[in-house]
Length: 84
Image (cartoon, rainbow, N blue to C red; front, side, top):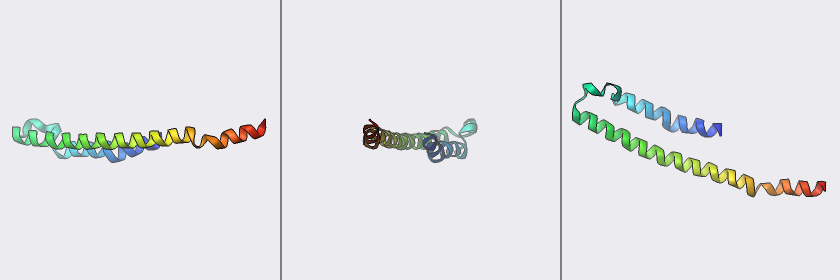
C-alpha cells in the first residue's frame, strides 16, 4: 500500500504542486484575467489526466490484491489440507 502512495505522490502530487507553482497561481492576483484563465485551464487538464492515471493505478492494484486473495490462495489451501 505504501508503494502505491509513493508512486502516486512521485508521479502526480509533487508534479502538480510544481506545475501550480510554475504557473504562478499562488500570485494569481498579479496576473491578467486571460493569464489566470489559461493557467487554470492548464492545471485543470493536468488534474483530469492525473485523476485518470491514479484511478487506473488503483484499479490495477485492486486487481492484484483480488488475484492474491483468490488465485494465490490455492497454495495456502493445499498446505492446510496436508496438515489435516
